[in-house]
Length: 192
Image 1 (tube, rainbow, N blue to C red):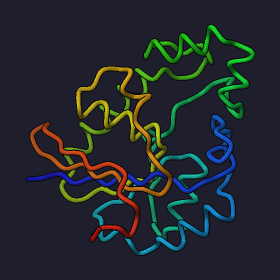
Image 2: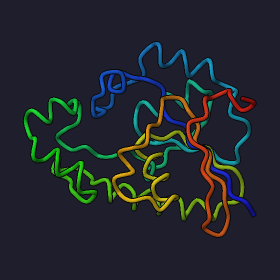
Image 3: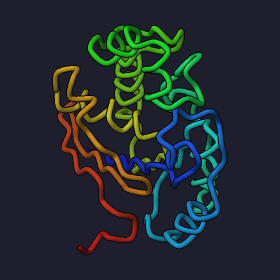
Image 4: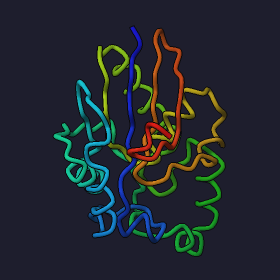
């Protein structure tokens, strides 16, 4: 049986607009309006999950989804860097930033490493593959990247080379541990 998973990236909020490590800010009015305009474009799902972050929960709500929070779908824990831009952190801790960007197992911010995020995402995918039916999940962009790197067996640096725009769908389909990946489909753009 083919497993189908659709990952939806959240709408814009202050953190995304300002390229900040998310500090839990809500959707901004424009992000909410964009999500509301895409409501009804996702089709039926057998289960709907959501990351516990504010912007993912609010995106799911604006899309009209009755989603169940799933702790395993949380975004990357950025520790003491939460709320800061990469430039701000680079000015304060340049060696720590370079370590974080070059070593997937580094977590100089006191949070979670990219490697740990990828392992968590892989575990969630393995568990989800046992669920029959279509899963829809509203998740942070870095979780989409972690799953893409995992599915493709790509080297660690590939994580930094994937761009996941807001309010896009990434479709995973597969069986027996073999996955196909379709990245960055705009919501409501199934026929394009």
